[in-house]
Image 1 (cartoon, rainbow, N blue to C red):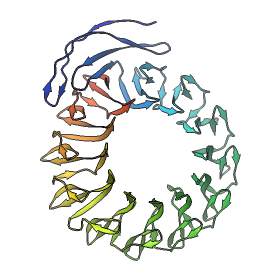
Image 2 (cartoon, one colour):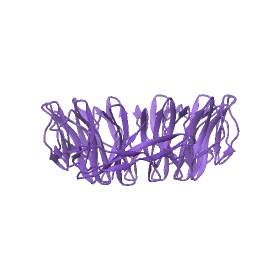
Image 3 (tube, rainbow, N blue to C red):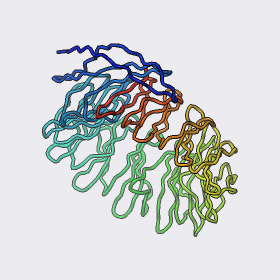
Image 4 (tube, rainbow, N blue to C red):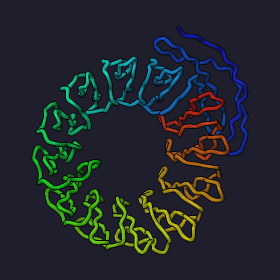
Length: 480
């Protein structure tokens, strides 16, 4: 049953850019958020400023993981040792445990626990209960998840249970079909589109390469790639346990090791053997990787070895269609961009980044740090963060004299004790700031209301949204 409570809202003061705005006083009828059997009252206050915000007081012990699901706000909450999801302003059923919300084909999905059983809640409906359920994934517009019952594990895909095995993992969409690794009796294999593949001692990383299934397999003491159903040449190692094969310009590429030498296999052809090679990467449609020979490091790009240095950092980056990477010589780092060494006149240079099609990087000189953007040095500070693009403009955090502030499009923002979490919301810069024991969001150059705790902001349907806590009370704050 709904309950309506008239609430008299007293004057609230919202400070923006040091100016105190007039407070809108109004009496607002609270909206009621209903679960199956539980009703929670939320007070809504409208605050006038250059940017209007709606502040909702929510009577929860904890809130977190704000997420946009199909253009609507969803978040995790906890009250009286029960957990639940709030979606589009409506509180879901309370459970002993719930996972964070996730979007599957435009609908809300999450894992819930009641008693000793786990299940999926999808589009408001509870699924079958199992001993354990893992976080769901979207495969070709349908929900897939791993479940466990009686010590056996299996995949539930589009509501149908697959075969039960000792274990299953690594769910992937390959050419619109479900693929995963299964283990049975100490042997592993791929299940793809419902069909079991050949069994090996080990199988890892089902990956789509040019619309076909590729994965790493091991038999005995040899590793190899299985691509489009065909086994490749066997090596001492293929990649690493945390590394999948990759696609470069529509062709299969991976690292391999034979004896004490590493090399890249690309489009079925072995590259030159080196003491070490990095993970392959596509730069402007061409293969690039870092190699080591003796005590020197260099880039191999489009089959050609670059200049040798004391060290070359991986990975390389693509900036405006050109290769960029960090190299080190004589204890100093610098940028190599389109074959040219840049920043060797500095004590250090790192973090090459593309900002609006131009190169930006962090440089250090005489114990000061600064950004070099499009060949021009920025102002020098005690410290700067890596550069970031916000609405096509350069943004970064700088520190000077114990204060931190944002430099955006060449202009310094106000200094605070701490700032971080730069993000773009509807084409505008938003970031988290702290001053003393207060936290707040600065959005489009304007300070928001100060709270004891503020979670970083997200964009929901083109509007800024964040969660905040003041005097042990949580609020959901939205741009009006």
